[in-house]
Image (cartoon, rainbow, N blue to C red):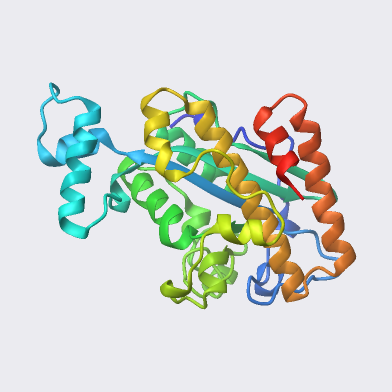
Length: 305
């Protein structure tokens, strides 16, 4: 893959991370003990969400379905087969095609950006490469809601299919980075390490039956939650060519995830009440500015109590 495909388009103005940012101790990124480290550069925070549709090409290949069968019928076939196996039509992780990866990124003294990685017509391979390139460049604190159960495993399988390298992300202490030894004790992969904070998993104490939806918790905490679309409508929107609506929806989920992370940091003492309010106002002010040109942010801000 060429350099142009690996360049992340979501946050074009983020400065390159120096060693002081990339060399993070466990306490600097801890999801479990999110205490601030005084006089240390801020660890970039990357709250993310993905949207997927059934992988039509993959289903055709695995079930030897001819080209004469329409995409809609391929998906209907796979869903019917899945319902017979499990009682539901949710595809296995490797058969999810990624159509959007959206992020809310907070870095530096006062920088924040919400957007979708890449261009609307980018291939799945390019989007995934750009996501992992963002991780490699900035070594951020990853934040998700059910990212350990869905988003990251999907990205793993799809990266494997496309052959997307992600050395920083997969570093577990044996990499070639200057701080690779730190990753033996705190990396993105190991479940109880904290460079990736799966808020749903952590708040449920890793008990699946205690997990709750992001939409519910966001609304209970006074945030907008989901507006208009949800995951069950993504395939229909994709089939109708409404990629922009999918990307807009994915961005609002990333914003909700970031807001929940701010609330969690308040809970854990990483932010005091004043710092929390300052961060909330920072995002709200940023989205107010976007709302002038982007209707989904106008709706989001209007729903924000």
